[in-house]
Image 1: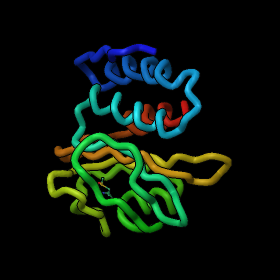
Image 2: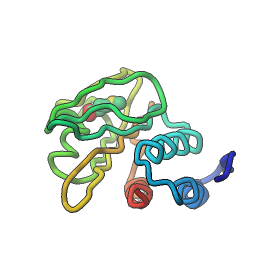
Image 3: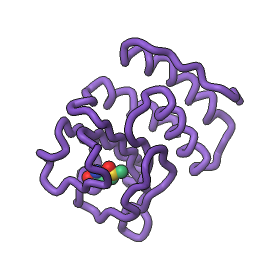
Length: 155
Ligand code: SME
């Protein structure tokens, strides 16, 4: 396993093209899901320096905070609540350009301005979500959706 990530600067596409195979290499041969979620969060944080990157996992019909990088966060989210709970309920990726305009958004930090949430789905069942927050408005678009879904598919 590589000990250090190679971090490139430049366009978002170039950054994803660089980090994707490195995440693939980090996950290769490792079957422990928490270890893999932790390394994905760390690699994405290091590459993009987003405000918050992490996972919530479905446990007893709630989302519970999992491996993450960034400031401390809310620990439990109900189904259908906030961006994460809505992504879970709808089983689809949500891009929120302005979190203040999203009804029911859960503000773990007032510094978070935009967000993307990607559901983790196995056999048609959502078992968690990847949540990424930025401290700038409209930081995420279809390109992030495509690449983050591709990264999640490595799990
Ligand atoms: N904003 C999320 C809550 C999780 S934190 O951003 C880490 C939401 O509305 O679901």
